Length: 164
Image 1 (cartoon, rainbow, N blue to C red):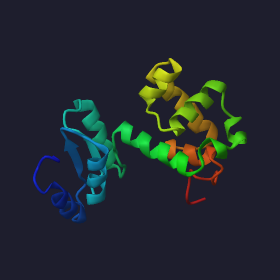
Image 2 (image 1 turned 180 degrees about the horizontal axis):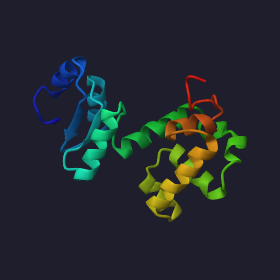
Image 3 (image 1 turned 120 degrees about the vertical axis):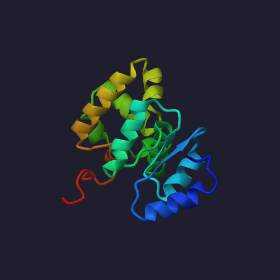
């Protein structure tokens, strides 16, 4: 819990000993999330999250994944897109593989919007946003949002498997 005194030192010590840690916070924010990850935590979530979400955090982190709130992930993706040149560096041949709606979803996600924000912006459901993202990932040959950004921003298109 991030409200415990000296929590960052405890996370650092335990993670160095091989523990897989998740930090929970009653008042989550980006700065604290980065602090948790820097200390060695594999996940960061709201302490009052529903049980199924906390189970998902546990599953992802237990399998060597990183879990952060969607808002933080969206900020990271949006920042990466801007750092790569934003819309001025879009790779039209990659975007040509997508339908008009998929392209709108991809660009909104690239700008740093969460699924909820994309749904509101495009007047569709979050479930539809997720379905479009699944189709986008398949068509572009990527696994996640960051790889999508690299693929549509004139970066190396072979980002799905570092072993290739």
